[in-house]
Figure (cartoon, helix red, strand yellow):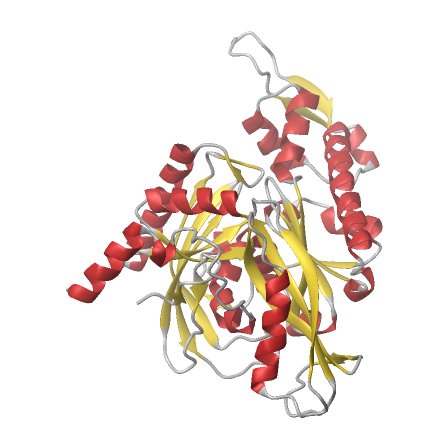
Length: 443
């Protein structure tokens, strides 16, 4: 039984989890560096104060990860290569969990993620706000966000207003003349989502739901106070760095820049004239985002590019490696600082920033981030999940864990009533979907 119903936008939509029973959830995190499949058992839990909106405990019962192929800065560049990697990652997770996966929740980094606020108001005529009025105002806001070439990934009501008084969380049963809502809508280009779905279908799997990468990593790395008071989660991946801003318990803004850890590696490969894999090793073992005076005297050897046995490794000061890394890291962080500033959400973020993602593990990064962003910075690791192997407990696995958490918060979203204009991305309206439905019902 799928967790999802078909949606009017053509994207699969999650049905809310039952808080009374257990569920098995499978997720796929497709990144520029690695592809991760996780299978988790979600069991109902008591309300907790620390982790927001968690209705279930999550125990990871299967995990598989592979080095990415066929994907560049979040965009699919080679369907065959990526399909092969997905199959291997899913197969490893299935073997560990001892069960078969047929559909997954998947992250979206490509498709030029858009983040917009739409406002709508309806007339109440002095009456009290009823459930139907809420539906009406939400539908009016959703309707504005419909675009032919873009699909809606998330739509969240971030706040209501009554007669111009803003900041109302739940206007139900209040009286007023005009009810307004601010709706945060995250969209992506349809073509990118189609290609993502196609790739997963080719591996004989179906997509249960799509989640914007910044939303997923924020869900995994932030604690209740941060989500409530306002905070930015910055996920530094291999090919892209994403930003999500949360306030009053909800996602209020997302953004992405096409810079990540892999750009640091290629800078090193170019600057030191060495192979990409050697540059990656140098980055992990020796690099720091902070230059240190003692590093001028310390020499490290750089393997040559050529195949010739007679080529000797060159010796360079360790400080040179750090200088190359520092330049790129500062550029990335300055770009993020400017994006937050331009978004208008800088006051909401306040002094709180959480860094997560694989590239956030670079030595000295939090210190550079504190200076460039002029904010308090901590490294966020996925929280509130049991059964993760030690290797998967770091910030590099935040997105995958966030995809596991997502079904618990999916019911916070609002979707427009059927518009009938938009053809499905696939889903139950496709021929294969219909055949599958017939098979399910007939046997």
